[in-house]
Image 1 (spheres, rainbow, N blue to C red):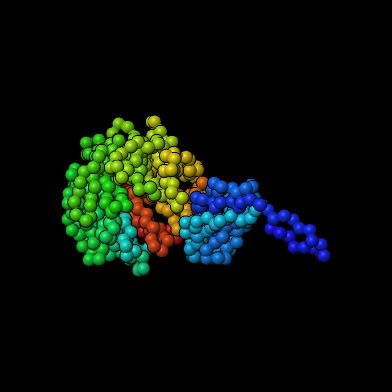
Image 2 (spheres, rainbow, N blue to C red; image 1 turned 45 degrees about the vertical axis):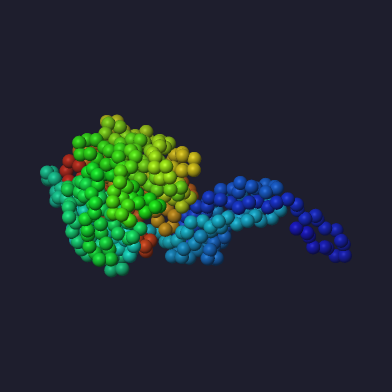
Length: 470
């Protein structure tokens, strides 16, 4: 850049020569109260000289990059408005000048600290149900188990439920969504591209049966049966609109490696190639590259690792094993940067409790890395929900008593910040729950439904209460 001449002299500094930096990549934004943190990767092309700093810009405009000019790869943008969605771009600078702006980050919405509030109660108490966000913004709750113990009585069995309910965020009320043809728990509920919900398998008569829910008419119809009875299986909606169903419990202490595909266009099931390892109570997540990562679960006498399904070749292959040697996939969420955050647990030998660990899977390099130390790391089957501000909230789960092998609900709520790769406690939900569901509403709130305060040798009653985390 030429300098302006001073007085009557004609001397000037030569303009810098060379090239400016390329654009930063892999942006990841997380919002807080009137601010956001933005992490990014340095440009692969730094230009003709070293990068001297970065600047983050917000859209809509108005935010201030507190760390403008810093060479740090994480900046804080202040002065944002709560309740407004923002994206961010980053530019790098060197001695030559400013480089090109990055592509926009994921959208995040700043908000004040979260709190819990009660909302309308279910018509029927239940746990082990499914809760599914419908295209119209309502939540469909299906099946589950009704336990009527009082904490002092050990009932012989739970009551399987065939009822379904709808939650309306506008009125905060529950209404009937009809009755299924069979009772179900351990089933899956998948929203199809046409908006219908595919409910498949499960205990208490579910087995091979399949039913479809149409929210437009609030009606159920019978679908084509699965090839084999499945419970504790996983279902994933593929980019081509088909549903991939994997594994499941065989009812005899073992598990399946078989898979099936549901095609909504023909209303038919077809069998696919078998997985590398048989498993149930696992997770199945569709990655940005279209592949499906199946993680954890139980496989009879052993705990399986991870594997990948490739729709292009219709084949399965082993993936890198999570760092937890005895991992059980509890929940996995796809982060905006394309990595998968999985909360897994393992039970130490001769112990009645689960140690929970969080790990990140990177599909680009097929590796797992630690995702920070959880604040409350002894909880069984918590829920994990990705929030509009870019963080992930973990709710409930059971802490197992060494003396009675009974899981008691945990009231601790904690939040994961992917930019800081760290966990922090949030407002607790009391009483603590397990066997509940957590669903992100279009409003940005998380709806927590049902559950129980204890399970195991001595059962507590299931709950009709629902709560909102917002």
